[in-house]
Length: 407
Ligand SMILES: Nc1ncnc2c1ncn2[C@@H]1O[C@H](COP(=O)(O)OP(=O)(O)OP(=O)(O)O)[C@@H](O)[C@H]1O
Image (cartoon, rainbow, N blue to C red; front, top):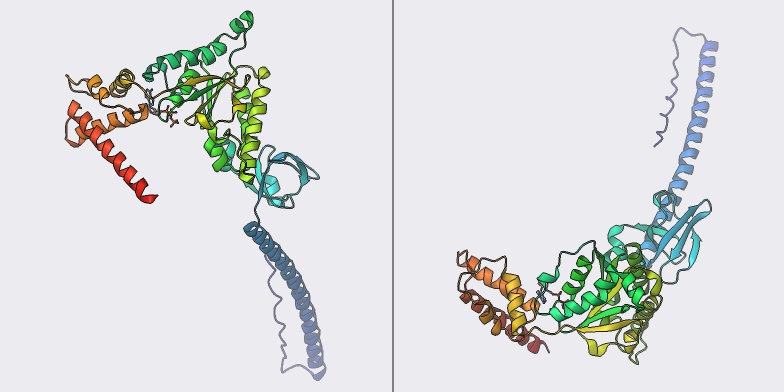
Protein backbone atom coordinates (compact mmCIF):
# COMPACT_ATOMS: atom_id res chain seq x y z
CA UNK A 1 0.00 0.00 0.00
CA UNK A 2 1.38 3.48 -0.82
CA UNK A 3 1.48 6.10 1.91
CA UNK A 4 0.64 9.71 0.99
CA UNK A 5 3.56 12.09 1.65
CA UNK A 6 3.11 14.41 4.65
CA UNK A 7 1.48 17.79 4.09
CA UNK A 8 3.76 20.84 3.43
CA UNK A 9 4.51 22.96 6.52
CA UNK A 10 2.36 25.99 7.12
CA UNK A 11 4.42 29.10 6.03
CA UNK A 12 5.28 31.50 8.85
CA UNK A 13 5.83 35.23 8.59
CA UNK A 14 8.71 36.32 10.77
CA UNK A 15 9.23 40.08 11.05
CA UNK A 16 12.17 41.50 12.92
CA UNK A 17 11.44 44.89 14.65
CA UNK A 18 14.91 45.93 13.52
CA UNK A 19 13.90 45.54 9.83
CA UNK A 20 13.55 48.55 7.59
CA UNK A 21 10.23 49.31 5.84
CA UNK A 22 11.55 47.88 2.54
CA UNK A 23 12.87 44.74 4.20
CA UNK A 24 9.48 44.16 5.89
CA UNK A 25 7.67 44.66 2.62
CA UNK A 26 9.98 42.18 0.91
CA UNK A 27 9.47 39.64 3.73
CA UNK A 28 5.68 39.98 3.42
CA UNK A 29 5.89 39.55 -0.36
CA UNK A 30 7.98 36.40 0.04
CA UNK A 31 5.52 35.07 2.59
CA UNK A 32 2.66 35.76 0.21
CA UNK A 33 4.45 33.91 -2.65
CA UNK A 34 5.14 30.95 -0.32
CA UNK A 35 1.45 30.83 0.70
CA UNK A 36 0.42 30.77 -2.97
CA UNK A 37 2.90 27.97 -3.62
CA UNK A 38 1.64 25.87 -0.68
CA UNK A 39 -1.93 26.53 -1.80
CA UNK A 40 -1.10 25.20 -5.30
CA UNK A 41 0.56 22.18 -3.80
CA UNK A 42 -2.43 21.46 -1.59
CA UNK A 43 -4.80 21.90 -4.52
CA UNK A 44 -2.82 19.34 -6.54
CA UNK A 45 -2.94 16.94 -3.64
CA UNK A 46 -6.66 17.45 -3.28
CA UNK A 47 -7.15 16.69 -6.98
CA UNK A 48 -5.11 13.48 -6.62
CA UNK A 49 -7.11 12.46 -3.57
CA UNK A 50 -10.37 13.12 -5.41
CA UNK A 51 -9.22 11.04 -8.38
CA UNK A 52 -8.23 8.22 -6.05
CA UNK A 53 -11.58 8.48 -4.28
CA UNK A 54 -13.33 8.20 -7.64
CA UNK A 55 -11.30 5.11 -8.50
CA UNK A 56 -12.02 3.47 -5.16
CA UNK A 57 -15.70 4.23 -5.53
CA UNK A 58 -15.73 2.51 -8.94
CA UNK A 59 -14.03 -0.53 -7.34
CA UNK A 60 -16.57 -0.58 -4.52
CA UNK A 61 -19.46 -0.32 -6.98
CA UNK A 62 -18.04 -3.14 -9.07
CA UNK A 63 -17.57 -5.37 -6.03
CA UNK A 64 -21.09 -4.58 -4.89
CA UNK A 65 -22.44 -5.54 -8.30
CA UNK A 66 -20.38 -8.74 -8.31
CA UNK A 67 -21.65 -9.53 -4.85
CA UNK A 68 -25.24 -8.97 -5.94
CA UNK A 69 -24.77 -11.18 -8.98
CA UNK A 70 -23.27 -13.89 -6.80
CA UNK A 71 -26.10 -13.62 -4.32
CA UNK A 72 -28.97 -13.53 -6.74
CA UNK A 73 -28.21 -15.74 -9.72
CA UNK A 74 -27.65 -19.46 -9.90
CA UNK A 75 -24.27 -20.50 -11.12
CA UNK A 76 -23.44 -23.26 -13.55
CA UNK A 77 -20.65 -25.78 -13.24
CA UNK A 78 -17.84 -26.02 -15.78
CA UNK A 79 -14.33 -27.39 -16.05
CA UNK A 80 -11.30 -25.32 -16.99
CA UNK A 81 -9.74 -26.69 -20.16
CA UNK A 82 -6.97 -24.19 -20.84
CA UNK A 83 -5.73 -20.80 -19.70
CA UNK A 84 -4.70 -18.71 -22.69
CA UNK A 85 -3.59 -15.13 -23.23
CA UNK A 86 -7.06 -14.33 -24.52
CA UNK A 87 -8.87 -15.72 -21.50
CA UNK A 88 -9.95 -18.99 -19.98
CA UNK A 89 -11.34 -21.84 -22.06
CA UNK A 90 -14.02 -23.69 -20.11
CA UNK A 91 -16.31 -26.60 -20.91
CA UNK A 92 -19.78 -26.46 -19.44
CA UNK A 93 -21.04 -29.59 -17.73
CA UNK A 94 -24.30 -30.94 -19.06
CA UNK A 95 -24.03 -29.68 -22.65
CA UNK A 96 -20.24 -29.88 -23.10
CA UNK A 97 -20.22 -26.47 -24.77
CA UNK A 98 -16.75 -24.93 -24.92
CA UNK A 99 -16.52 -21.22 -24.17
CA UNK A 100 -13.69 -18.68 -24.11
CA UNK A 101 -14.37 -16.52 -21.10
CA UNK A 102 -12.77 -14.30 -18.48
CA UNK A 103 -12.01 -14.56 -14.80
CA UNK A 104 -11.03 -11.71 -12.50
CA UNK A 105 -7.27 -11.25 -12.21
CA UNK A 106 -7.21 -12.63 -8.68
CA UNK A 107 -9.17 -15.74 -9.66
CA UNK A 108 -7.25 -16.28 -12.87
CA UNK A 109 -3.96 -16.69 -11.06
CA UNK A 110 -5.51 -19.55 -9.05
CA UNK A 111 -6.96 -21.40 -12.03
CA UNK A 112 -5.46 -24.61 -13.36
CA UNK A 113 -6.64 -26.79 -16.26
CA UNK A 114 -8.98 -29.47 -14.88
CA UNK A 115 -10.35 -27.27 -12.08
CA UNK A 116 -14.08 -27.25 -11.57
CA UNK A 117 -15.50 -23.75 -11.51
CA UNK A 118 -18.82 -22.00 -11.07
CA UNK A 119 -19.78 -19.69 -13.93
CA UNK A 120 -22.61 -17.17 -14.22
CA UNK A 121 -25.11 -16.59 -17.03
CA UNK A 122 -22.50 -14.76 -19.08
CA UNK A 123 -20.02 -17.60 -18.54
CA UNK A 124 -17.69 -15.45 -16.40
CA UNK A 125 -15.84 -17.54 -13.84
CA UNK A 126 -17.12 -16.65 -10.38
CA UNK A 127 -15.61 -19.22 -8.11
CA UNK A 128 -13.17 -22.13 -8.08
CA UNK A 129 -14.75 -25.19 -6.51
CA UNK A 130 -12.59 -27.19 -4.17
CA UNK A 131 -12.42 -30.98 -3.96
CA UNK A 132 -15.18 -31.24 -1.37
CA UNK A 133 -17.67 -29.82 -3.82
CA UNK A 134 -16.45 -32.10 -6.58
CA UNK A 135 -19.44 -34.30 -7.24
CA UNK A 136 -17.34 -36.88 -9.03
CA UNK A 137 -15.49 -37.52 -5.78
CA UNK A 138 -18.69 -37.38 -3.77
CA UNK A 139 -20.81 -39.55 -6.00
CA UNK A 140 -18.37 -42.41 -6.30
CA UNK A 141 -16.93 -44.61 -3.64
CA UNK A 142 -13.59 -45.92 -4.86
CA UNK A 143 -11.82 -48.66 -2.89
CA UNK A 144 -8.56 -50.18 -4.04
CA UNK A 145 -9.24 -53.37 -2.18
CA UNK A 146 -12.45 -53.69 -0.16
CA UNK A 147 -12.13 -55.63 3.06
CA UNK A 148 -14.82 -58.20 2.33
CA UNK A 149 -14.08 -61.84 1.57
CA UNK A 150 -16.37 -64.61 0.34
CA UNK A 151 -15.96 -66.23 3.77
CA UNK A 152 -17.68 -63.20 5.36
CA UNK A 153 -20.87 -63.85 3.40
CA UNK A 154 -23.25 -66.48 4.73
CA UNK A 155 -26.11 -68.45 3.24
CA UNK A 156 -25.69 -67.52 -0.44
CA UNK A 157 -23.03 -69.94 -1.65
CA UNK A 158 -24.75 -70.56 -4.99
CA UNK A 159 -24.86 -66.83 -5.67
CA UNK A 160 -21.19 -66.48 -4.76
CA UNK A 161 -20.35 -69.22 -7.25
CA UNK A 162 -22.38 -67.54 -9.99
CA UNK A 163 -20.81 -64.14 -9.36
CA UNK A 164 -17.32 -65.62 -9.40
CA UNK A 165 -18.03 -67.25 -12.74
CA UNK A 166 -19.48 -64.08 -14.28
CA UNK A 167 -17.08 -61.51 -12.83
CA UNK A 168 -13.97 -63.03 -11.32
CA UNK A 169 -13.17 -65.62 -14.01
CA UNK A 170 -13.29 -63.16 -16.94
CA UNK A 171 -11.05 -60.76 -14.98
CA UNK A 172 -8.60 -63.47 -13.97
CA UNK A 173 -8.38 -65.30 -17.24
CA UNK A 174 -9.78 -63.36 -20.19
CA UNK A 175 -7.74 -65.50 -22.63
CA UNK A 176 -9.69 -68.59 -21.60
CA UNK A 177 -12.94 -66.93 -22.69
CA UNK A 178 -11.33 -65.79 -25.93
CA UNK A 179 -9.91 -69.24 -26.63
CA UNK A 180 -13.30 -70.88 -26.14
CA UNK A 181 -14.94 -68.11 -28.15
CA UNK A 182 -17.59 -67.03 -25.65
CA UNK A 183 -18.23 -63.55 -24.37
CA UNK A 184 -18.51 -63.26 -20.62
CA UNK A 185 -21.77 -61.66 -19.41
CA UNK A 186 -21.74 -57.91 -19.98
CA UNK A 187 -23.37 -56.96 -16.73
CA UNK A 188 -24.43 -58.80 -13.60
CA UNK A 189 -27.60 -57.71 -11.85
CA UNK A 190 -28.12 -58.79 -8.23
CA UNK A 191 -31.71 -58.54 -7.14
CA UNK A 192 -33.50 -59.37 -3.92
CA UNK A 193 -34.71 -57.89 -0.62
CA UNK A 194 -32.67 -55.24 1.26
CA UNK A 195 -29.79 -56.26 3.50
CA UNK A 196 -29.17 -59.70 2.01
CA UNK A 197 -25.53 -59.16 1.06
CA UNK A 198 -25.65 -57.79 -2.49
CA UNK A 199 -23.16 -55.01 -1.81
CA UNK A 200 -20.95 -57.41 0.14
CA UNK A 201 -20.94 -59.78 -2.82
CA UNK A 202 -19.83 -57.05 -5.22
CA UNK A 203 -17.10 -55.90 -2.81
CA UNK A 204 -15.89 -59.44 -2.20
CA UNK A 205 -15.61 -60.25 -5.89
CA UNK A 206 -13.64 -57.03 -6.49
CA UNK A 207 -11.38 -57.84 -3.58
CA UNK A 208 -10.76 -61.43 -4.58
CA UNK A 209 -10.03 -60.47 -8.19
CA UNK A 210 -7.65 -57.69 -7.10
CA UNK A 211 -9.83 -55.15 -8.87
CA UNK A 212 -10.64 -51.58 -7.84
CA UNK A 213 -14.20 -51.34 -6.52
CA UNK A 214 -16.10 -48.30 -7.79
CA UNK A 215 -19.57 -47.81 -6.37
CA UNK A 216 -22.21 -45.32 -7.38
CA UNK A 217 -25.68 -45.11 -5.82
CA UNK A 218 -28.51 -44.69 -8.34
CA UNK A 219 -30.70 -42.92 -5.79
CA UNK A 220 -28.04 -40.27 -5.16
CA UNK A 221 -27.62 -39.66 -8.88
CA UNK A 222 -31.23 -38.58 -9.14
CA UNK A 223 -31.63 -36.87 -5.76
CA UNK A 224 -28.30 -35.29 -4.94
CA UNK A 225 -26.61 -34.66 -8.25
CA UNK A 226 -29.52 -33.31 -10.24
CA UNK A 227 -28.45 -32.29 -13.72
CA UNK A 228 -25.17 -34.16 -13.46
CA UNK A 229 -26.40 -37.78 -13.71
CA UNK A 230 -25.42 -38.45 -17.31
CA UNK A 231 -22.01 -36.85 -16.87
CA UNK A 232 -21.36 -38.81 -13.70
CA UNK A 233 -22.25 -42.07 -15.44
CA UNK A 234 -19.75 -41.21 -18.18
CA UNK A 235 -17.16 -40.33 -15.55
CA UNK A 236 -17.86 -43.62 -13.79
CA UNK A 237 -16.94 -45.66 -16.86
CA UNK A 238 -13.97 -43.42 -17.62
CA UNK A 239 -12.65 -43.82 -14.11
CA UNK A 240 -13.07 -47.59 -14.29
CA UNK A 241 -11.08 -47.67 -17.54
CA UNK A 242 -8.33 -45.64 -15.87
CA UNK A 243 -8.25 -47.96 -12.89
CA UNK A 244 -8.64 -51.35 -14.57
CA UNK A 245 -8.97 -54.07 -13.48
CA UNK A 246 -12.08 -52.64 -11.91
CA UNK A 247 -15.58 -53.62 -10.80
CA UNK A 248 -18.25 -50.98 -11.27
CA UNK A 249 -21.17 -51.39 -8.85
CA UNK A 250 -24.34 -49.37 -9.34
CA UNK A 251 -26.48 -49.73 -6.23
CA UNK A 252 -30.24 -49.08 -6.38
CA UNK A 253 -30.14 -49.09 -10.16
CA UNK A 254 -33.96 -48.89 -10.20
CA UNK A 255 -33.62 -45.17 -9.36
CA UNK A 256 -32.15 -44.50 -12.82
CA UNK A 257 -33.63 -47.41 -14.76
CA UNK A 258 -37.27 -47.57 -13.77
CA UNK A 259 -39.98 -48.33 -16.34
CA UNK A 260 -40.95 -45.29 -18.35
CA UNK A 261 -43.95 -43.43 -17.05
CA UNK A 262 -46.21 -41.09 -19.01
CA UNK A 263 -45.18 -38.14 -16.93
CA UNK A 264 -43.18 -35.55 -18.81
CA UNK A 265 -41.75 -33.66 -15.87
CA UNK A 266 -38.19 -32.44 -16.20
CA UNK A 267 -37.14 -34.75 -13.38
CA UNK A 268 -38.13 -37.72 -15.47
CA UNK A 269 -36.36 -36.33 -18.50
CA UNK A 270 -33.22 -36.01 -16.44
CA UNK A 271 -33.52 -39.60 -15.17
CA UNK A 272 -34.08 -40.73 -18.77
CA UNK A 273 -30.91 -38.96 -19.88
CA UNK A 274 -28.96 -40.66 -17.11
CA UNK A 275 -30.34 -44.04 -18.14
CA UNK A 276 -29.62 -43.43 -21.84
CA UNK A 277 -26.04 -42.60 -20.93
CA UNK A 278 -25.79 -45.82 -18.93
CA UNK A 279 -27.15 -47.85 -21.86
CA UNK A 280 -24.80 -46.24 -24.33
CA UNK A 281 -21.82 -46.82 -22.02
CA UNK A 282 -22.76 -50.48 -21.71
CA UNK A 283 -23.30 -50.85 -25.46
CA UNK A 284 -19.88 -49.41 -26.19
CA UNK A 285 -18.37 -51.57 -23.54
CA UNK A 286 -16.66 -54.28 -25.61
CA UNK A 287 -13.38 -52.49 -25.92
CA UNK A 288 -13.12 -51.33 -22.38
CA UNK A 289 -10.71 -53.99 -21.21
CA UNK A 290 -10.71 -55.41 -17.75
CA UNK A 291 -13.77 -53.74 -16.33
CA UNK A 292 -16.80 -55.68 -15.07
CA UNK A 293 -20.17 -54.10 -14.35
CA UNK A 294 -22.48 -55.07 -11.52
CA UNK A 295 -25.68 -53.51 -10.24
CA UNK A 296 -28.17 -54.21 -7.48
CA UNK A 297 -31.85 -53.57 -6.90
CA UNK A 298 -34.54 -54.35 -4.34
CA UNK A 299 -37.17 -53.49 -6.95
CA UNK A 300 -36.63 -55.86 -9.82
CA UNK A 301 -40.28 -55.46 -10.83
CA UNK A 302 -39.76 -51.76 -11.50
CA UNK A 303 -36.88 -52.08 -13.96
CA UNK A 304 -37.11 -50.94 -17.54
CA UNK A 305 -36.55 -53.98 -19.74
CA UNK A 306 -34.16 -52.00 -21.93
CA UNK A 307 -31.41 -52.48 -19.35
CA UNK A 308 -31.88 -56.27 -19.30
CA UNK A 309 -31.26 -56.81 -23.02
CA UNK A 310 -28.31 -58.93 -24.18
CA UNK A 311 -25.10 -56.97 -24.00
CA UNK A 312 -26.38 -55.02 -21.00
CA UNK A 313 -27.37 -56.59 -17.66
CA UNK A 314 -27.66 -60.06 -19.11
CA UNK A 315 -26.81 -62.16 -16.05
CA UNK A 316 -29.48 -61.96 -13.37
CA UNK A 317 -28.69 -63.36 -9.94
CA UNK A 318 -31.36 -63.46 -7.27
CA UNK A 319 -30.13 -62.95 -3.71
CA UNK A 320 -33.00 -64.14 -1.51
CA UNK A 321 -33.68 -63.78 2.18
CA UNK A 322 -31.66 -66.43 4.00
CA UNK A 323 -33.27 -69.74 5.09
CA UNK A 324 -32.71 -71.20 8.59
CA UNK A 325 -29.40 -72.74 7.59
CA UNK A 326 -28.25 -69.51 5.95
CA UNK A 327 -29.31 -67.48 8.99
CA UNK A 328 -27.31 -69.78 11.28
CA UNK A 329 -24.23 -69.32 9.08
CA UNK A 330 -24.66 -65.54 9.04
CA UNK A 331 -25.08 -65.50 12.83
CA UNK A 332 -21.94 -67.60 13.17
CA UNK A 333 -20.04 -65.12 11.00
CA UNK A 334 -21.24 -62.15 13.02
CA UNK A 335 -20.46 -63.78 16.36
CA UNK A 336 -17.10 -65.29 15.47
CA UNK A 337 -15.18 -62.46 17.13
CA UNK A 338 -17.54 -62.34 20.11
CA UNK A 339 -17.02 -64.14 23.38
CA UNK A 340 -20.06 -66.43 23.19
CA UNK A 341 -20.77 -68.56 26.28
CA UNK A 342 -20.20 -72.27 25.87
CA UNK A 343 -23.37 -74.21 25.22
CA UNK A 344 -25.01 -71.41 23.21
CA UNK A 345 -26.77 -72.92 20.21
CA UNK A 346 -26.51 -70.46 17.33
CA UNK A 347 -28.76 -72.55 15.06
CA UNK A 348 -31.45 -72.63 17.72
CA UNK A 349 -31.34 -68.82 17.83
CA UNK A 350 -31.33 -68.65 14.02
CA UNK A 351 -34.36 -70.93 13.76
CA UNK A 352 -36.37 -68.24 15.55
CA UNK A 353 -35.31 -65.54 13.10
CA UNK A 354 -37.68 -66.21 10.27
CA UNK A 355 -37.87 -63.22 7.93
CA UNK A 356 -34.57 -61.75 9.16
CA UNK A 357 -32.16 -60.50 6.53
CA UNK A 358 -28.38 -60.68 6.88
CA UNK A 359 -28.35 -57.02 7.94
CA UNK A 360 -31.00 -57.74 10.63
CA UNK A 361 -28.90 -60.63 11.94
CA UNK A 362 -25.81 -58.41 12.09
CA UNK A 363 -27.75 -55.89 14.24
CA UNK A 364 -29.11 -58.71 16.43
CA UNK A 365 -25.57 -59.94 17.18
CA UNK A 366 -24.41 -56.43 18.12
CA UNK A 367 -27.50 -55.90 20.29
CA UNK A 368 -26.94 -59.23 22.12
CA UNK A 369 -23.36 -58.15 22.83
CA UNK A 370 -24.70 -54.87 24.25
CA UNK A 371 -26.94 -56.78 26.70
CA UNK A 372 -23.85 -58.58 28.06
CA UNK A 373 -21.93 -55.29 28.32
CA UNK A 374 -24.80 -53.57 30.18
CA UNK A 375 -24.92 -56.52 32.55
CA UNK A 376 -21.20 -56.20 33.26
CA UNK A 377 -20.48 -59.66 31.78
CA UNK A 378 -17.75 -60.58 29.31
CA UNK A 379 -19.68 -63.51 27.81
CA UNK A 380 -22.69 -63.35 25.54
CA UNK A 381 -25.34 -65.93 26.48
CA UNK A 382 -28.19 -67.46 24.54
CA UNK A 383 -30.60 -65.38 26.67
CA UNK A 384 -28.91 -62.22 25.36
CA UNK A 385 -29.83 -63.23 21.80
CA UNK A 386 -33.43 -63.80 22.93
CA UNK A 387 -33.51 -60.40 24.64
CA UNK A 388 -31.99 -58.75 21.56
CA UNK A 389 -34.62 -60.38 19.34
CA UNK A 390 -37.43 -59.08 21.55
CA UNK A 391 -35.91 -55.62 21.63
CA UNK A 392 -35.57 -55.47 17.84
CA UNK A 393 -39.11 -56.79 17.45
CA UNK A 394 -40.44 -54.11 19.81
CA UNK A 395 -38.50 -51.46 17.95
CA UNK A 396 -39.94 -52.66 14.66
CA UNK A 397 -43.48 -52.64 16.07
CA UNK A 398 -43.06 -49.11 17.39
CA UNK A 399 -41.74 -48.06 13.98
CA UNK A 400 -44.76 -49.62 12.30
CA UNK A 401 -47.09 -47.86 14.73
CA UNK A 402 -45.41 -44.54 14.02
CA UNK A 403 -45.73 -45.14 10.29
CA UNK A 404 -49.42 -46.10 10.63
CA UNK A 405 -50.01 -43.05 12.79
CA UNK A 406 -48.37 -40.79 10.22
CA UNK A 407 -50.43 -42.03 7.32
N1 LIG B 1 -25.33 -62.88 3.56
C1 LIG B 1 -24.77 -62.14 4.53
N2 LIG B 1 -23.76 -62.65 5.28
C2 LIG B 1 -23.20 -61.92 6.26
N3 LIG B 1 -23.57 -60.65 6.56
C3 LIG B 1 -24.56 -60.10 5.85
C4 LIG B 1 -25.19 -60.81 4.79
N4 LIG B 1 -26.13 -60.01 4.24
C5 LIG B 1 -26.07 -58.84 4.90
N5 LIG B 1 -25.13 -58.87 5.87
C6 LIG B 1 -24.82 -57.79 6.81
O1 LIG B 1 -25.65 -56.69 6.48
C7 LIG B 1 -24.87 -55.57 6.05
C8 LIG B 1 -25.55 -54.95 4.83
O2 LIG B 1 -25.47 -55.84 3.74
P1 LIG B 1 -25.39 -55.36 2.24
O3 LIG B 1 -25.12 -53.89 2.21
O4 LIG B 1 -24.45 -56.24 1.49
O5 LIG B 1 -26.85 -55.63 1.79
P2 LIG B 1 -27.56 -55.27 0.42
O6 LIG B 1 -28.26 -56.48 -0.04
O7 LIG B 1 -26.61 -54.61 -0.49
O8 LIG B 1 -28.62 -54.25 0.99
P3 LIG B 1 -29.37 -53.02 0.27
O9 LIG B 1 -30.22 -53.61 -0.78
O10 LIG B 1 -30.16 -52.46 1.43
O11 LIG B 1 -28.28 -52.11 -0.23
C9 LIG B 1 -23.50 -56.13 5.76
O12 LIG B 1 -22.51 -55.17 6.01
C10 LIG B 1 -23.41 -57.30 6.71
O13 LIG B 1 -23.00 -56.87 7.99
